[in-house]
View (cartoon, rainbow, N blue to C red):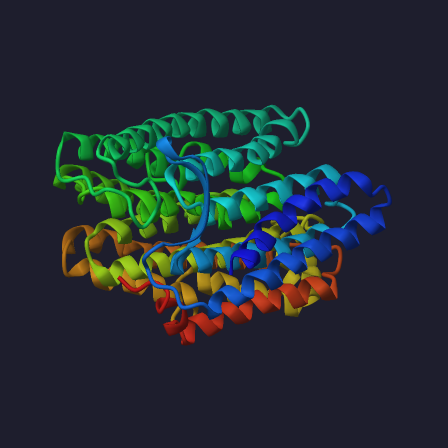
Length: 472
């Protein structure tokens, strides 16, 4: 198991340096694909190991014992799911990314570095390593947003600066929270390793830590009122990057709650918890309404993502075990759906949007590319929470669990059903019937998107497999 984890984490890191040595583009593409395929294959055996919700430390190398400085690796059931999700989506992203209009060696290296940092984050076994891995993830993100973001486009640069300042503030809050928790553990002669962290009883200290960690995940996920960076970033980020960003990076805040806040801190004070729930409810409605009113397809998906991520946070904080499981399930499904939808937009770079269907006749997407149109329909239905698709399972679990504890707020949160159906079908009509199509979708792209579509149907019909990893 330890050898498997090391191979999984450091294969993309070796690939990062390997690309420096390869000069021919065709060989670079083969090498990159091979690296991603290896990482994916290394991740699959993790499902065979008996793991529970408790974090299991599998490797420990101590280098400063008195201060508990060590390199520690471990996993739990939630981590296993996200490790496999990370390896799978990076493999798919690489296969999409190999196209001539997207491929760049510097971008490929940034992806490999990001993948290494995410895998280190999901397997980090102590507080210090968790924080260092968190900050390592930020380095390639800043490269994508600030230095490679549509050249000198002022709007793109503004989006990058928004991302930097919001996330820099969140990192400072997290650093303060981790430092306080670390000092508390050292002074009380307790471990800083996950699975053995000290429990902090209800107190001013616990409330202060909830404020610090709450601000961090509110920015990273993001929660309403802390979301201003997200729509601009999604709309202006490189098209081949935004799918990974929406699918995986936005879940870092959830990981902070699962690994650090919930196991260590007493339940948040009622006022703080209610603030989270109210802001999440507003975010659900706000995101859905703006998605319905926008015409830019990237901003539609950005606000749709905001709405669903706030629903996820609503499930985590409303106190219901069923809603909590539904929120974790939704985090996986949101990753699959958003990844697929953003890549469909990336592949549609040659479309002329909003061309009147009557004037263009059979040149519209629905008639010229019926199979691709069918795939778009599957992802749109899953995003809208249509029964039989995976999005429905997560949404229904959150709302059903929430009604027993917070019926009024859950009633408002239920508007996500109407709003997501409305903007999904408006966007779908525009995309299928009012879009002129000028090129064909490659066979490989159809196969990859078909695989994701099958997963959305399978998890919608048989969600028990994933729910077994999220026992509360």
